[in-house]
Image (tube, rainbow, N blue to C red; front, side, top):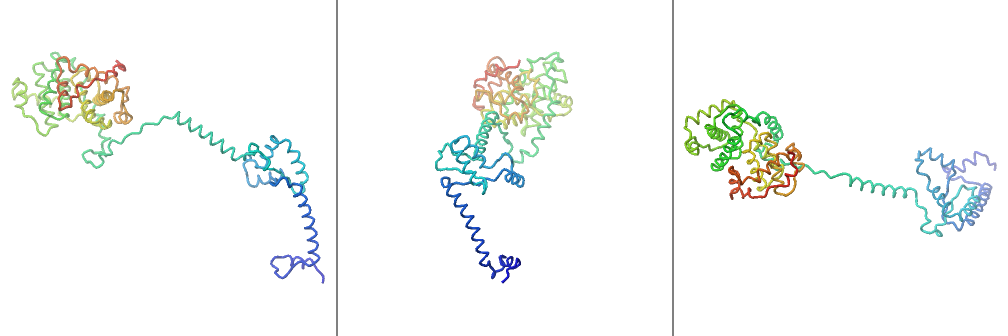
Length: 430
């Protein structure tokens, strides 16, 4: 039988299930296999002391693989890392490893490592593990530095979240309302030096009048809004109209009457006002002064007073009953003083809340939430606050003690008896 190349190829084809090698081809293949196995057995016997054998490609082969796979050149093969460590830590074994490597060059380059005879300290650490540990340490150090350098900011409190379902709180428009109030307060306040044009009255007479009106306001149990609007109407009228001292009390009574008509549900009658003035004025005089005041002010009664702002700022401060009474005590003391007209109503209200907080807690207290809603920093409030502390210290002395007597009653929880925040005087900007 003649064996051709075509027959041989068909017999080797795995799809040919009935074909196969003949006896001569099988014999030749067996001889080749025996020679290859003899070489392999010889290599294995010589490297019996090194059970862990890692095949290492040549430099050209490694370079070709890196180009194909686009491996990062920084991450070198682990076997090369092992070779570098063995060269530095086991000089006595390097010569033996080189000899064994040279003997096996026909099968490729080998790095032979005896893990059983190496100490724990000599065990090489994979490069990936070394870098991971180092990166973890660096990240921990960076986190520590960041925690030391960065201060945790105080979060802003949503003071209107509790009134979301209260239609009277107008939460949807509250911010726009106070933006409007701040614009209006610039033109709705009296000049701080309007007394210069008055020839028969002075600052002392104004203080006496307002101190008396505060007691009248408390006796009639009127709302806070009425008192603040009354003082605003008096100052705005006296800025535009000269008044003799004989008519000054009449101006105060009419201003309170107008404020009651604007704010109160139950308004005191004219006869009641005449009675508390010890019948110093007649009914016609009261009505004539009412007409004059309204015409002079152009019937402008809707003005933002300190009360409008202090209610909002107390809400931002999350004030309790004690803090609220103390803030009103301080701001009413300021209403009596003519020099406090240089401060806007919003600043006056913010300073009263700030001073009340310092008085209650015994240290300077002004949160980020209060600063956000008042638009005043602590430094901007110190001048006005130091003046309020001075008024608090001398509230029970002198002749003008109407506010002190009002807040010394059980109705107001004896607020006036608390100790003033004297430490704020050290930070006075005066």
